[in-house]
Length: 347
Ligand SMILES: C[S@@+](CC[C@H](N)C(=O)[O-])C[C@H]1O[C@@H](n2cnc3c(N)ncnc32)[C@H](O)[C@@H]1O
Image 1: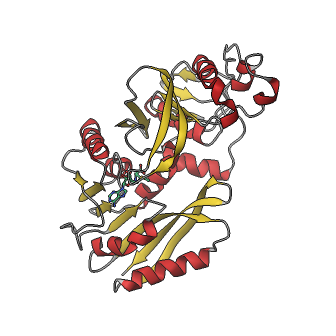
Image 2: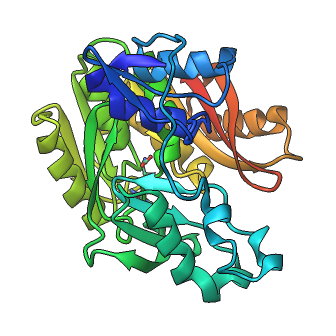
């Protein structure tokens, strides 16, 4: 994949999140372009994600140089360092937030966590700290517990997504780099002069990506976590969006003077969004608007049943679902548990 140099980091993040990065080959830079090696020819859904995430890119053939790495992957790097029977459960995927890597290390491997993180850092020299997941995403701030295995003492990092910078500390705030396509998808739906309310905005990922790509009237990013709001304010300044995004430290379900203002509401609190759908409706203009509602559902729950629930919650507050613009199961978050999004037009 060939992109302008300015989109290089973006392209790398995107390709990696699609598991398409060929780590055996060296990324090339030629005539102001970055050429990212892929593991296979992209299929239609990959191309769709590239279009959403990068807009300008090309798929071309290139003779890449082989990357000189002593071990190709973590499994190979750990051979001889872990008991043979444990090698097969060494994690094969991970998340990168800025220069921090997040590993999900199975219980049986925890005594070797330090060894694993050291091998990981040698394989990924850009990673400056390795965190191990130590519990589920929990409590009102939706922050996960981590053990810092290795690296510099500060876990504040700068994550780049679509050329934008997100300063954050994963130990204090929620941030999911895997939502990169979702943020871009929602941004692509936004029209001119909209007022948007992100009820659960975290460090401002949705508001910043939207405000950078669309000429919105105003975006209100609400969050109840003071650390998230502090990072959101820094991110607004870092991305030169002062005056276009308002960071609101509040409970989005409390009485806020934002009723009847929004053309669009974003609700990414998947465990509880349904409960707060009535509050989202109250933010919408009297003429209506769009609500992007993110929900976790079990595979057994049918789309029909969920949409029925959405209809009745909207009706309860005296509004009406005009149409469901789209419904997507986009990520399996646990076995048979899906992260879904419904884009609902409400009058
Ligand atoms: C799953 S995170 C989503 C963050 C952000 N939308 C993103 O995609 O990165 C949910 C966020 O909602 C916040 N939150 C939870 N309950 C809230 C409430 N009642 N009012 C406002 N924010 C809330 C949490 O602090 C957390 O930052």
